[in-house]
Length: 168
Image 1: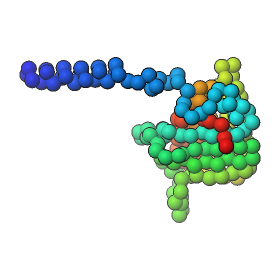
Image 2: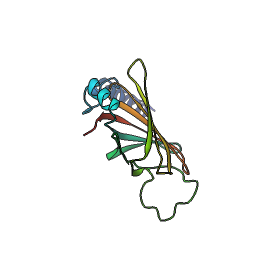
Image 3: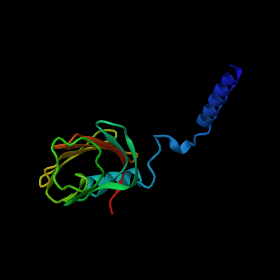
Image 4: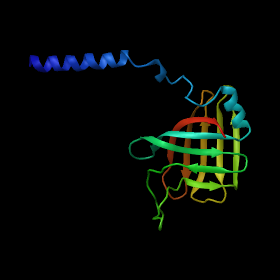
C-alpha cells in the first residue's frame, strides 16, 4: 500500500513539474509564428490575398487530429485553392473518388467579409462551380489565429484550426 502511495505521489510531482516548466511561447495570446504583423494580415484580408494554414482538424464525429504537412486554403481575388484533408461521414457513396472532397480549385465563387470592432474577420466563401462544398466559413483573428468551418453537400461538416498569413 505504501509503495502504491509513493508511486502516486511521484506521478503527481512529475505532472506538477511539467506545468511549472511549460515554455511561455505556448500561450494562446501570442501571435502565430510566421503570420506577419496585424497590419499585414488586415491588409491581406481586405485585398483578398491571404493563406489559411490548418494545423488541427475537428470532424463532426470522432476525435480531433493534429495535422502534419502543409494543408491550406489560398484566397486571391479571382481564385480559391483548397488543399485540406477530410475525416467524416459520407451520406452518399462516391464513385471512383481517390482525393479529398476538400482538394479543389475554383474561379467561380462568391465571398462576403465582415470585420468587427476588435479586428476579427468573418468571411464566407461559396464555390459556385464545385457542388460538393456549400461554404467555407472563416473566422480570422487579429493575432493571426484562424478557424474554418466547412459545410458540405453529401457529407458531415468538418472544422479546422490554424493560422492566417498574407498570401504570396
